[in-house]
Length: 114
Image 1 (tube, one colour):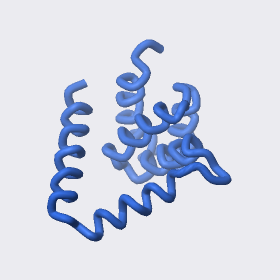
Image 2: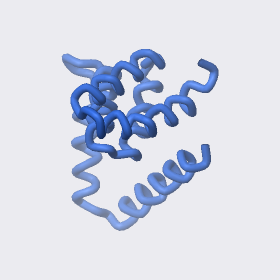
Image 3: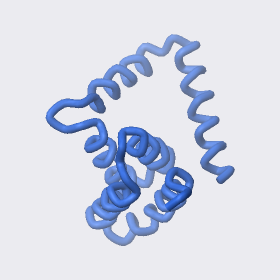
């Protein structure tokens, strides 16, 4: 899906630019992200699934794409991702149901054979 590839390309470009600019705030964010998503009492996969539900509630399309991709890389199944989206729908109500449409598009891209 071209919108997803465009979003990934823009995210990679912005990431490279922020690093090239030596952004202290961006570096601190990356350090926090690394700490937050590392295995602990909760696995990285569990944390990515939590982030998917939050992303649906706040309607962050880039976040939905990133965390669905990361959850899959961490071993999440399509059903686990779907349930994380469903938790987001429950927490966010009607608007989150509309936001979840984008997450379903990402799922189709990440899990094409299912």
